[in-house]
Length: 239
Ligand code: ADP
Ligand code: MG
Image 1: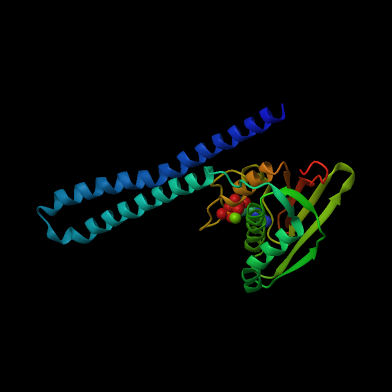
Image 2: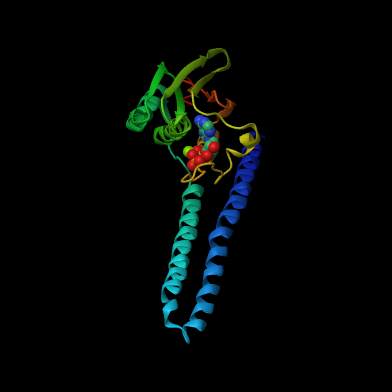
């Protein structure tokens, strides 16, 4: 039963991924098509007017740029569909979070962002590198949301009775507008000029693959918090 649920969630993710991909690739392809048409027309004109050579080269370069863009999108899709982790080891979330902060600290300092940590040892079963990636994604988003000067709070809260552990990552950034809340986990959804829109899609999947849940609360102009809940490592069963 549980497997079925996980499977259908995976299919839903793949479906959204496919929708995101076709939307993203249509763009560069439309430009390629249009540029090829312009080249054709300009070459026809060139037969009578040699000055046109710059605009022909420009169209050819546009074709090249957009072939690269489409290739890049396909490549990211291939990376996305690879399994994220294979290991199922006992991992200390405190170490994972310390490591992710270390990797993002320079970026944070550049924007005058301080970290406030309330961490404790908390063990889950999974892949350390995938989990570091997850926290880097969330921390980088927090840094980008703050832009300049602010605070990122990261807390580990044991929920012993339920056999879970909760991690809260809170920022004092610009917040997420209500109307895009249901899109932020979609692959390729981004509001950033140079964003990939894959950070949260990948993060969601890593959390899911660890049997966890991810929730988000946000208020425009005040900040955002991501809440992650993972089942804790079970010493007796080794899981
Ligand atoms: P990217 O960072 O490349 O845009 P993500 O999947 O990481 O892609 O995030 C998707 C979108 O969700 C972002 O473009 C941004 O609009 C929103 N978002 C994610 N995290 C935050 C945050 N901490 N504060 C405000 N907005 C956020
Ligand atoms: Mg991101």
